[in-house]
Image 1 (cartoon, rainbow, N blue to C red):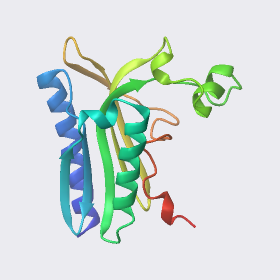
Image 2 (cartoon, one colour):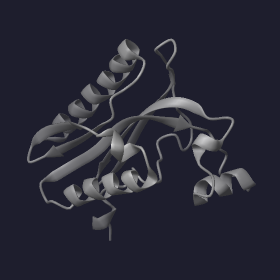
Image 3 (tube, one colour):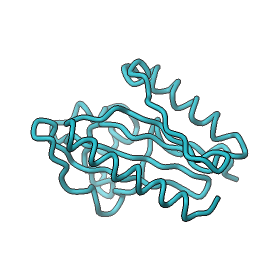
Image 4 (cartoon, helix red, strand yellow):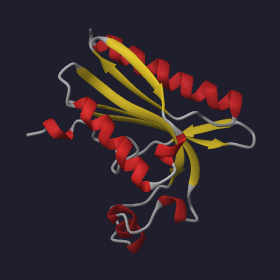
Length: 163
């Protein structure tokens, strides 16, 4: 297994995420792994994403798989809400979101997005795009400072092995 194979796998997933949204106007949520030198893709049952408890259970399952020594990468592709907040400013909104007291879905400035989070022992890669479900349009990629950073339930699946 080479780094090139993992990079190629992530690119296929990214392109598939965009194409599937453009065709259907929505995505089936998936989790993926690069394990034992092989790519693995599985649909996420809706009940795991319906509640915070389900999301936490799913994250724990993924983290447990990431503890296996032959797991080189893990991630998810889902639809979500995204919002750009300025964390440099000491705003109450930024504090509330970063602490978990306020959900992104509760913010007026939220946007529909599709997102791919790929986690490995070396770090994370986040690709997210603004979308319009009504027109099935995939817009601009979230870019700029912090756009490739992710925190929360579905991030840092390999943190267990950080020293």
